[in-house]
Image (tube, rainbow, N blue to C red; front, side, top):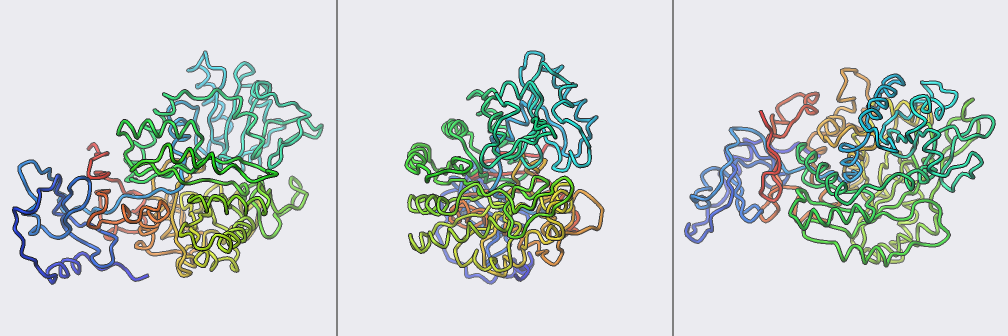
Length: 575
């Protein structure tokens, strides 16, 4: 992909464009004018402008200062960029705002790198601060926590902190949990409990549950945890949207939306508090099934809740787990074996291929965009095989399937993304050199270093989009360190020179296109957002520095000065 033309080149292009005589009085005044800056449009024909005008939340003028005069009136608001860079808002196409907002407001949280002593101290503080609470839930512990911190019984270790409070803590992937005896009792999990399909209770040598639940084994606890109230759900999502806007995000995708979360989104929409294009992937049954899902119920939910800002004809399926120490992502080749994991495995397939094909065929026919969790290259292949059958059955529906966290892709399967019109749902917030990658290395070996082939996917013609997966693995929704990592293939939080598959590094222009236009295409809103263009929603972010005039290592330090959604300021940085 060629580098974007410079601002100076775009100014020269503007000067060369023909001028059309027009009665100024015939042009309605703009509600907002933004000018005196360097606005990166993401449009190839005119990549840079210095001024825009907005009316009714949409761009009605792009150009230079001289062309603004007809759009001004005494009532027109004015933002002087003072030379700063602006660009389209970021689209996070895979996150969990409902869970993240609740976690931020109501749960007991510690960092991924926390030591046992730090976790114990945090838990004791949360217990002291919530004397009437029956459950203390939160997290998140590192995927390799119990490899680097040997515990004879993780359950009894938590019991030493409290036997009166039920403690339930998720890991950094969001797929596994750690619990104490009180939580086990309240969840009704017996030591002799049979492992559920698609899940596992870890046990000691005597066969006693040791306090670790993998994948679907966590559902016994999520069913027992006190459900948040509707007001808490609304507050949590509202908080998540505030955080998203503060990072320059104007499009969010709730990657797994249960009915109670969808109800909260609907209420926020009705009250005018959705400050981003919001996509809700409806939750579907998780785990092995003997028959296809009931698509009709999803259609009913979608039709009853959709609006101009709330887009609900989307669904989420889980095909596998994660390729960390849990070894639950489905891989083409077996995981490494060792003393702790002596049995050979290729992971845990959660939906049989025939059922998957039936589900996808029905959902595609009903007009749903489907996101499939495929963290291993084996799951990617199974999903692509099913999608190929859907295309043969339904024809080209125009809808893109999405493979979530598709970081491991067998070379033979790379061209199939473009051929089958499948989006690669990237997780650049997660994949750079960091502890969770260390856990993956321990599970899959050298294959861990061939993760997320961005350059090859772009060359293949595939649509790429990016998501934070927050609060799973990502500390927050901040897209700027992730964008830096896509270009550098380094840890944006460290000065360490270590890289992860640097041959797959991409340009800044390509990374920005993935974060804006790629997400808009995934939302099916490319005609609405993703670039600065006439008639599109005025979703604009003003940055503290020009991304094209700073070192790549400084991209992660980017901070929006303003975030505008549909022409309204939804975030303004306080200096």
